[in-house]
Length: 171
Ligand code: 4NP
Image (tube, rainbow, N blue to C red; front, side, top):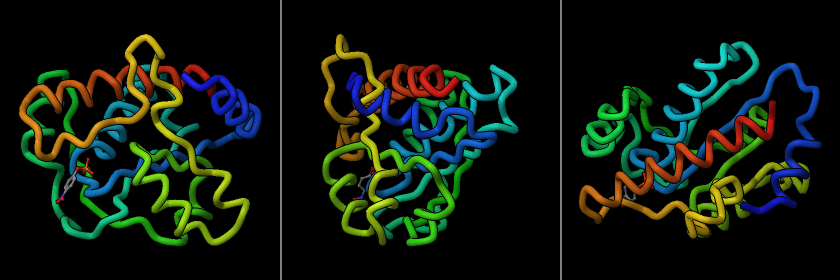
């Protein structure tokens, strides 16, 4: 966990009627649609759907229009999450339309910083791992695309921990 990022974000968004969060990875078929689904379920459990607007996108454009990766959907479904996001690429207007742009790894963050049109837009970019418990010992959400089942389970474990901490820090 990165206390400085967590506190700075909480201060910036404190008291806002609506909090708009965009989760971003490379392909937008594994990690970010899973984060989107995990966060939606936490928000729903807490009856806060009207306060949070949640979406996801990819820095790459290889899978535009696709559902999440079949393996990600199967692993998520076992945890009670149906992932129905349709893949899209990050666009410049996302920096206006969202308050928080959450990247899964360093490469995603670097690409997002390159796309940010203004200094204010760049300040919205944060790493997902900042909200993951330090005890889990991950400084990024690892790309599971070329991994086996274990990689998808790790992603879901990290996202369930990180999204719960993110939700708590904004409540
Ligand atoms: P994601 O995983 O960034 O978590 O959606 C990937 C999905 C697709 C590819 C790479 C990573 N790809 O190279 O097609």
